[in-house]
Length: 163
Image: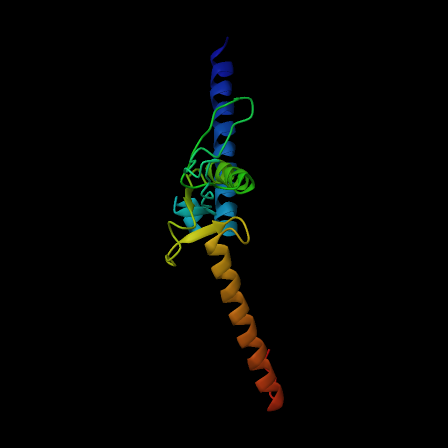
């Protein structure tokens, strides 16, 4: 192979890699615009709702902790202190994969109970009624909406309109 062919191959590969890097950088920037800088810096929390399994008893009234079973395993029981709905885990998995691929960072998977009182973080909350973070956001939005409606009514009574 002549020298010009080798140089052309190297130059072509360099152009290809530069284009790929530019595309990934643009995708990273677009992802940061959508999810915020915490998603691209590894500080995004994916919050799933933690559920406590019910206390069960056998026929004699003794506590029975092994209330979960696994399909295909007969006569096998499992216990857990926290259960998480599978639809929330599946949604968190899809978003975690997206963050890893587009932002080149890892997301933090946590339960709502672990961060219920924290307000100094960026998070995506899965689940409606089973997630404390979603519930707090919903109640905060209801308060803001009712305050906004009340403010609009007061302004209307004074014939003041603000847009």
